[in-house]
Structures are given as structure tokens and as C-alpha cells.
Length: 421
Ligand code: ADP
Image (cartoon, rainbow, N blue to C red; front, side, top):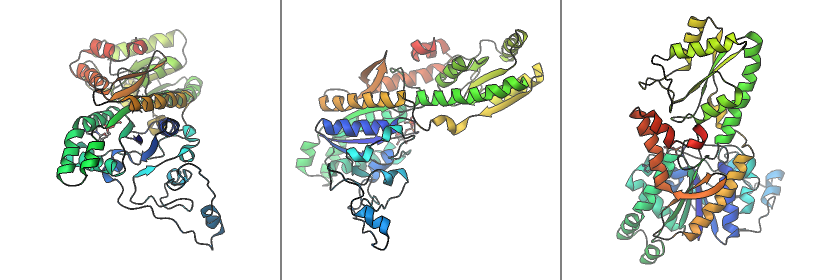
């Protein structure tokens, strides 16, 4: 089996550990392993050039030394593309390897992914790809995979990316028929690639996927937010100030809720459970006033990115600040943590989880038949699980629908109840 792995959508800590795990475990299970750079964009673009061996200028002693064998790989000697520096510094031409210009689908060996679990973001690149939303784009993607003989795909991304993966798999028979009719693949290739094995891993800092307790990158993002709040707490207590923090999470309140509980916040706004009182300003002020009266010198209010009131009107940090300053006379500041929350170096759990899930992904691909659904690898009660990918995506969408329908109790129960209750 030839497995390709790609990362797609927003980056999250732990995506590199996914790639590392799939490559290493894939090889150990006797598969050939490939990387698709830049998410679905790379799949659609494919390889338009052959490898171009780099000829090191001998006048440059360092380059010459590296070209002579600064890197040794006993695995896939001829096809490897360097020691990872290529990807790490974004350089396409590297003295050690071969040019990656015009090549988005490349073979990877053990050495290419060594040490990747400690790296933040995704070294193989991620992108949002409009073309993959069209059948034409997916046709090009299918052709590019078949050209390299790849018959299995691991997609690590959020619900959008996993939806794309499911669409791709469902459409696969039509795609290969079209490629055959257009003379782009042979009868033999058509027969060999009748079934695309596909599996999804959830890489998202928001922990916004149903049917799994945690998404890859969420624990690291939560850790970063808690660290930031701990820092702010010092100033807040010293000056007896109030701070309103806006945290990421899109339509999901997990980051805001758990960060609030972990740091002893005074009030938390999350999309799944808007403030009971309408208007909510009185409820907020009474609660904060009560905390101040029992001797708290500082006030921390956390506003999730997607927070809104019971009428679905967005709640903004700046407005909350005005309410606290004007009604309670508190010296209030707003802090938006922004992209520092996306992670950086993964915490230990964001190395372990992708490593275990990568193994399960390879196993699911090896066991995949035309009759089995595409699976999403999740984690439930500390066990790595497989669930039908589309069921998880549909359930995730149902939460958003419940919120839009103002059925907040339903949204809450559809979200991972163990965590939110
Ligand atoms: P995330 O995976 O983080 O939720 P997006 O929603 O932006 O991020 O999705 C990432 C990519 O997945 C998109 O740019 C697109 O290429 C692909 N994608 C998303 N939804 C679909 C779909 N319905 N059909 C095909 N491709 C899709």
C-alpha cells in the first residue's frame, strides 16, 4: 500500500507528530509513505517536474560538504528529499536534497520526519484550497495520486478538511471513470485504483469536533491560554484591575470554558450557553460585584470568539469592558491573545495523541475495504477510537444548527457532554 499524508485547514500543534507517526508506522507496516505538501492545494497541483538533483558549487565548501553526504538515509536513498531542513526553512532548493519546485507529492522516509513531534505548526504546509471544492479540482487530485501509484490518504485537519476527504472518497468511482474516459489513466490503473482508502485525523485547536473527546492541538492551545492568563493575573491583582480576554474557538466554547475553569475566571461567555438573563449585563455586573465584595482584588472575564447572547447577537470584549468600567467603575483592560494561542511547541499530550492516532490511522487504512466507511480517528475515555467520518462531521454540524435555532440545551448535549457539564 502507498500512503500519502496531508495537513489541511488551520494549523495546530501536533500536526507534525501526525505526519511523523503515519510515515514511521506506515513504513514499519510495510507501506510506502508519501507526503502531500500544502494540503489539498498540493494534491490538486501535483508534480509537474521531475526531481532536479542539486549540483553544489564546489567553491562553497559547506554546500559541497553537505552535497557529498551530510545526510545519510539508508531508507529510500534515491527518493528522499533531505533531512527536513527543506521544509523547516521553506527553501525549495537545498544542497542536501533535490529541488521540490513543481513537486507537491513527495516520498518520505524515517529521516525526513525525525524529531518532528517537538515542532509547532505543520512543516509540510497547509492551505485553504478553493479548487478542491470543485469536481475539476478533485479530478486533478485523483489523477495526481494515481500517477504516483498512491492508494491511501490520511487527512489531518478540521471539519472542513474532513468533509473534503469524505466528498473525495464518495466521488472516487466517478473520478476514475472520467480519468479513464479522458485517456488520462490506463485500464490497468483504473482497475488497480478502484478503491481509495481514506482516513481523517482531527487537527484543530478549537476542540470543535463531535464524537471525540479531544482534537489534536487543543491541549496545547489551552495550555498557552492558561499561561497568558496566569501572567495577566499578576498585574490584575497588583492593580486591582479587571481584564477581559478574548480567546479563539470559532463556534466552540471549549477553550474559553476550560481556560476559565483552570484559571479561576469570574465570568465566561461561550456560544453553547449564552447568559441566562436577557439583557445579560445585569447578571454579569451582579456576579462581578459579588466577587469583589468577598474580597477578590482582580477580575477576569473570558469571551469566546463565537460568544453571543440569547438572541445570537455577538458579545464583544470591548463592549464587556465598557460595561465593567461604566457600571462598576472598574479599571478594565481588554487583551486579545490572537495567534499566540495557536500553539507553538506541542505539549506532551499533543505528541502522544497524534502518535497513537497515527498508528490507528495506518491500521484502519490497511483494513479498509470498498464496503467500510471512511473513518475518523478519535479518542474517547482515554481510548483511541474509530468512528465513521461523516457521522462525526454531521454531528458537529448539528451543534451549529442547534445554536442557530437557539436550542442551546441541544447544542450543549451534542457537544462532548463529559467536558461541558
Ligand atoms: P478546517 O479543515 O480547519 O475546518 P476549512 O473549512 O477551511 O478548514 O477546510 C479546509 C479545506 O478543505 C478547504 O479549503 C477545502 O479545500 C476543503 N473542503 C472543505 N469543505 C469541502 C467540501 N464540502 N468539499 C470539498 N472540499 C472541501
